[in-house]
Length: 239
Image (cartoon, rainbow, N blue to C red; front, side, top):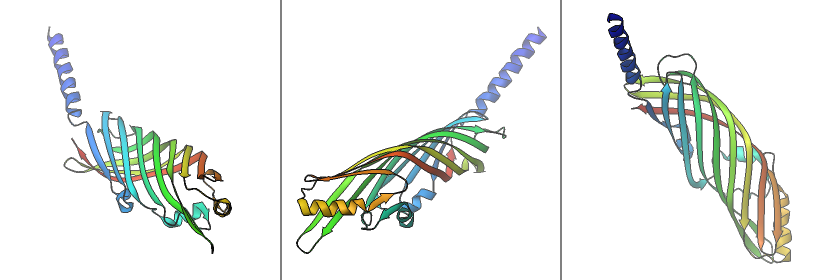
């Protein structure tokens, strides 16, 4: 009988301990680094036990000038400044599974996190044909969609009452892209030749680009591999 009561007490204590560990399983975070270029990136993390959690990131950037212009200049051969007045908007969603490798407290310590990422990039720009006999602007808009997967490493600390700091050190990812951009502007023969010349001089070492120019305007398609790197410095609230 005493053994029975002891077993019930032990089970009750374990259940209470497990319940307390899960009293605050949630963490909502704001990544402060993207704010410098107009992005808003929010994360939600939920612990499953002391070593495992699920984390999701949603990022949004309203359409505005290209950030880090020097990086774009290095990635594209843009002799005619087609991207000079471009506007970029972006949305992405990234689910991940986090494995906390050493710490026995939930949502704390060094972690390894496999993830997948879907991103949509909206671009608006124009090609300007300025000859002595005519002037034509071809507005181009469309979207580039990417799907990648990777593994991130980082560490998370509790720095105050229910306040956490998450440093995702690095998260390389690799996958594929597909994009379509169109400019529906009627073009005569001379205009088509000049637009095609400018597009032939526009290329990238990151994307495979297919270009088509006809009397109805311009179509640009992208495809092939796509790579990126995720980093973050986020402040979170535990609840």
